[in-house]
Amino acid sequence: DVKVTQSSRYLVKRTGEKVFLECVQDMDHENMFWYRQDPGLGLRLIYFSYDVKMKEKGDIPEGYSVSREKKERFSLILESASTNQTSMYLCASSPTGDGTDTQYFGPGTRLTVL
Amino acid sequence: GQNIDQPTEMTATEGAIVQINCTYQTSGFNGLFWYQQHAGEAPTFLSYNVLDGLEEKGRFSSFLSRSKGYSYLLLKELQMKDSASYLCAVLDSNYQLIWGAGTKLIIKP
Image 1 (cartoon, each protein chain N blue to C red):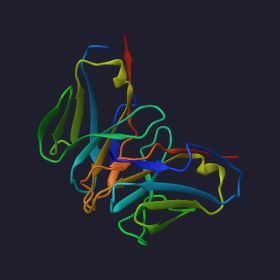
Image 2: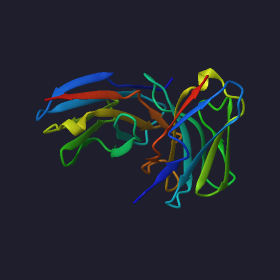
Image 3: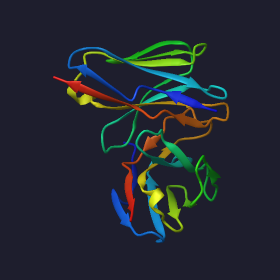
């Protein structure tokens, strides 16, 4: 069974802290994605990766960075957390290529920045 | 700009049929996805349409009209467990997914 896990379901951090969100998939997928989900808005893509050590900016990369040192793991980093980064963060993975594959999502991390 | 429109919320009765509409304006089109998301959970895949017409999968069907920029998700024989948000997403010419805000479906007994 396909599985995407995220390191925390709930996280509370202070403004200015460095925050790491971890995502691991066990399906040997090439593609991994980080989204944020806010009420009344669609999922917004922060960063994605098509291969190890490869990353591409999505629609809203400002204030975020990512790391993909191993195929199964994709980390999202908030260099200096701010209150406007309070959100639900969803990680997803998909098998290959052109985007027509189903994306498999993790359970999400609800981050609150105080 | 790129835009996906879905109703914010819909209410339906257990056992009935409901149709959730999605209209889109995107730069190119390489398919349309529907995902289901229960409150506090991950979105899960329901359907993918790239050709015009209706695709049926059990109680759920998805329809696409590319010329009209329109899709709908049809849910039959509604069950309480169908209470969830339904997300429409379009794959644009760059093979990037553009997501709608989702439709929250409330099922009443």
